[in-house]
Length: 449
Ligand code: AMP
Image 1 (cartoon, rainbow, N blue to C red):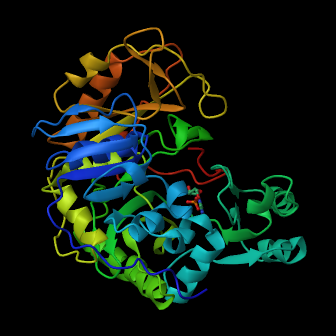
Image 2: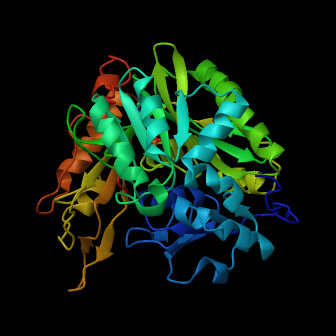
């Protein structure tokens, strides 16, 4: 593919007085909270937790208005779906300053085959892979690999398109099911088959202005629902930042070896990528390897990375949006821990409509912020009810990882609703100095959102 859509004339990043954030989850709540240090923030559609006035005195609002109709100096698009669907292109065509890639760059997340081919072309370390539309060659390739085996749908598949398994027969059956179109429709008619990598995972979010890169602090998230990395895969049950093993030197090396070559490959295709590149990395015994790139801020990683940022997020994102990224993001040393509270039945059949108690008590705990993800106003009056699988992210900053953990769990203890679920071991291994929490990579499926 070549000749990606040009973003058109770039508005210069004048003063940012109002920011429009697109999305409704915990990621958008965290973005709004940190952007509101220096600007008014309008979130569309937002959620009941996103509102009020920041400590610095800037208004935060959730509105039902479509982003095209919100007047703002900067637009920040949270989730991948509107990016893949070209929202950034439409806003840029209307002369707006937008943080988020166009549909051409968002293809990185919309097609795993495209992403892997770009990584291979750019020489980025990643799992060995092949792209297939026929069962025979895919099975032959599977048999040439040592386990664990990984089978991914090429397209977005409602968060369920990745199988990681120790059993070759299961991988072979999965290839056939995906390619038949029965399991995932069109998204599965092309598959990426990969060697399974083993090691702790780490997420690195890197701002990009089309050319220049600025890494944010690394984070680790927790994908399985239950303690000890057991239970089903989820959209993320918690996170912490920084990751002690991923020091500044390793971050620089990852940017040089994994992210910069990708941006060169994007540019070679005419893609002017202005947004965040989220590298999902596995720290393997033979060095870090890229599992995937996403085209948006991670959730819940954002909830632990952005609160640690020092300075002006509006200016940083505006610089990247304008192709003029000159500021280096700086982070306070205080670690952050986020514990996700999920509804009964999550991830398979989340129950909604349960009344949430203790929000104010949790927010009163020293260092704690409660980010809303899946909440709604109680239709029967005041208060808030559950309205999704992942409901809240209780985030705490502290002078040490252990203290941040203690505070986050004190916040968690204040909150309750019938059937509330959370993990008790977020950041436990890292806080005790035992290194990054090991991630069991076996028999994983891609996280449901
Ligand atoms: P992806 O959407 O490609 O990141 O895959 C979702 C999850 O599956 C990742 O976060 C990993 O936990 C796991 N995964 C993906 N690819 C691999 C691989 N090659 N080896 C081991 N685990 C993987």
